[in-house]
Image 1 (cartoon, rainbow, N blue to C red):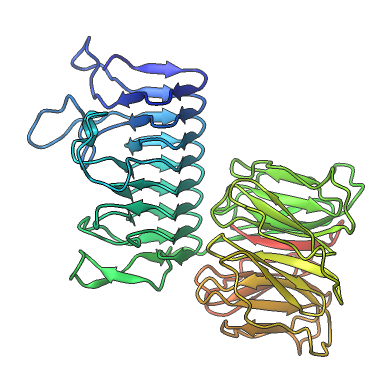
Image 2: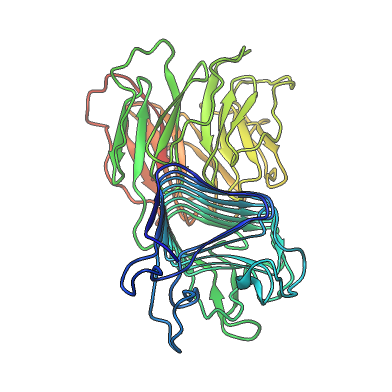
Length: 487
């Protein structure tokens, strides 16, 4: 309760220690703030506790003794909050420019009171409420009493994965406004309303797993009216087009820069947009990555590896903080904590080369597609729904995308033909004369449509959820368009 405090570098909470920035006033003044600002990262060690920020409705400040809480204190973090095997992470009324990562740890599968930290008198828990996060939120592998993430504004994605709680009312990821995706899987209990009287997450990308748009649970549990856990935002995301020279063209999205005008020894072959649209990555044929935007961090590349075949595509991890590159021989290169390596087709004899890669919406798998429409699945979340490998095609397949609603997928051919596998068919361009061939496909967040993009930058929106915002079809381009990403 002495502040305000400004840390110009990182702040580390040592193993077993605790940092409690939960006082509205400092002890020298009844009007002075006791806020904490960390311009770098906050790093929380094994068995440590972070309690950052306070205020109504659910994070009462320690010096707010009134019957109805009115005081607040904010925490401000210029980097990330990174907790590994921590006891608990409590964040209220705070602003984090980067990511919040809370992986492993907890107080065990019990709600017995803990004497380690005063806030845990009702059992150990982790909680993120009424805060703003510029990056992504990752909560994974916690075993504790209770977990929640409520009323936050997140510019990237929220992922709540394999968290096991003793309280049957736990795992409430609700009432958040998320520009990216919301992914919940493998949690016990499954993500729910509990007694929070919360509202659905409003999601600019897609909901997946326990937080998918089609999931409805009692609000409040166990007998309230069935209510959607997540719903699509009312505004449609824009899209980015990427060209072979590194040029980037935005339609309803934010421009963070491009690689156009820099020497290009190898052409760019693919574009992936960070969930939420605050960044993107270009991959070129030798595996090098050009990154742009606050959430488009460079996490590695295949540029220094001996490639048997050139890289042909890139896919962003749905939870953020990762991407996969795919080569023509089916090799896969995984970069970042959000994009684990789950296998490849590099050792398989392929009839036709791989031309694209698509991440499953739950983030725990990916598919490769070959020019003949053959599909190869990798990871526990990937499901084989069929392929075109035995059919004679009018034009080669050039891309693939997952249906966020069904878990199926669409394949697209160079002539604009679209092939649906356990996904609704919203039309194709197979019978239309195109000035230039199709080079890519992107799905509407609710699965009720898709976009096709042509080599000349022409964009075709098919289905009620795909909204045309413009194209490059009438412009003279310095290099052909090679890919598209939704922002």
